[in-house]
Length: 269
Ligand code: HEC
Ligand code: HEC
Image (tube, rainbow, N blue to C red; front, side):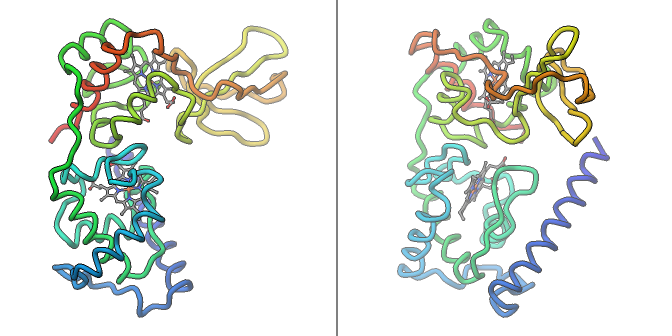
């Protein structure tokens, strides 16, 4: 756990350093200050509208046109893991959140401040969509359908699929439903499935962790870490990118309830 935190920190420091060099090359040093203002210096109505325009181009892909969330977090809830004060949001938008899909931005500081103004407005309107289903019924469905055989929530379950402890904060409602009925529609880089057809012996399937010229490292479907030498592999198949089965067969009500349960998982806070 500690080493994971340390690795994470080292990786984010390296990322930040790389990002800084890149940005100096891109925008010149003046556009990026080391000091971050305590309150947003770009907060006129015109600034917020420019922020909206930038948001539409750079962010809706993950956060939705109205900030309702999708692959990215619901920004209309006004709840932030990394802090909701102006300088916190500035840092989140400028540097991204290392170890997640939230990317760093290459825009100038002025542009980032304008977007922060718009993000704050999204979070303060109280437009957050409430999940329509019954979360308690969804929790029972989660147990009944064996989801914990691949996922972790808090201390329970395993790590074959993504940890769902805070999935309701990280992902929007539409994305959650799509994850259940069409798991293949989006598979993050860290959870791509592979099937190894061996020259002899049974096939090996799992989540691809790493690959080099000689071997493939994977977490097999029993959760074991394995390294397989490529010279014993007849065929490396990636035609089924997700290990997760589709739950399309569930009734509309069950799906809505499961989504409500997933949406209620906001992490330990
Ligand atoms: C490739 C997808 C993607 C793009 C593009 C993206 N985000 Fe995100 N964003 C995410 C994800 C995923 C999260 C949730 C990360 C987590 O906490 O695990 C997130 C979280 C956030 C948060 C909440 C952070 C917190 O403290 O909880 C803010 C604010 C945010 N994004 C703003 C933006 C803005 C502004 C842009 C455009 C410049 C943007 N994002 C572009 C995926 C994206
Ligand atoms: C056989 C293993 C397996 C089972 C069973 C399974 N999942 Fe998954 N799940 C995965 C894997 C692997 C991924 C990552 C790849 C993907 O996104 O399709 C995933 C992704 C997800 C995601 C998207 C998470 C994110 O942050 O991107 C959600 C939500 C989810 N599963 C919920 C469920 C629920 C609810 C159930 C039970 C009804 C379930 N899963 C059953 C393996 C499984």
